[in-house]
Length: 353
Image (cartoon, rainbow, N blue to C red; front, side, top):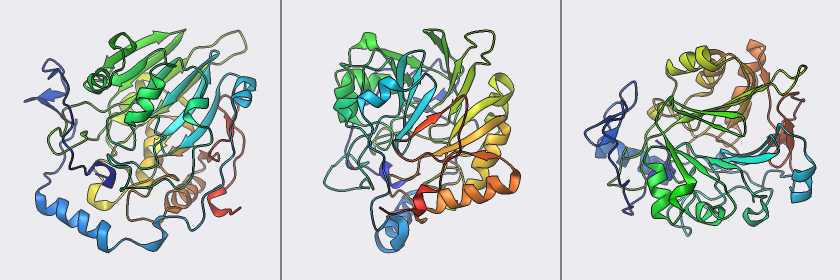
């Protein structure tokens, strides 16, 4: 678990129990591999550590370098361009349309904007300056992945939200038109403009308060852009959302790999909650299991959600991929990254303006 999920505010629950889902039991969703039990003493120890034992280097002393992004730059970008906007939010251009993952533009990953994990940097582009979106891909309902204000403000410029079971119910309760919401169980899929979107398993949990734990499903996503001509090999992407390491990566790799780029969680980890957030060594192994070519680590560089140095995810994954000869991509926030012809990137977290 991560600090951003520790809310003391009751929130609306999904309108359905989804009892027919293979992932549901007794009104809640579950992982393929059960999580260890967590009692109040466990929660108290985590809160104590976050309050009194927080290292000084979990937050950068100066804001990380961000490249401002304009609507004109987005429109000029070719298809199969990706832009990191922060944490697990990436903007992808495919078949002339724009897709965004887990859009979080809030100042804090928290139910209260006067306390909780605060952004290290401003988004490269303002929420209102985003182009019309073909779709929003949501992985789960934690505050660092599901931003209430962003959802409401994007509802008017988004064709559809693609969400795991129950998360879509939250969107409708927040005022998103029901006809714009698509909900998925694991292994369910959709075809949009020739793109194939598949909801795939993850090892995590859900909830936005004390009373709705695991009432909604969590998911990862496979995005397949088939070949568009004789000399086009197509494109296969994997977006992990939040997850611990599990054997589902190998199954996803067998069904849908090899992947050109894997967007894998690398950050907010701790041995205490390794069953829901991967250690960097596990991130690299997940990339191998998925039969990935280029690893692009996400879930880092924006919020202080754990006890490690804010640069630790980048440094550790850089060393690990170098040891194993794995191609690594670490684009700066706002930098254009070409998905079907990946270019070299720089260690921006070591830089200061």
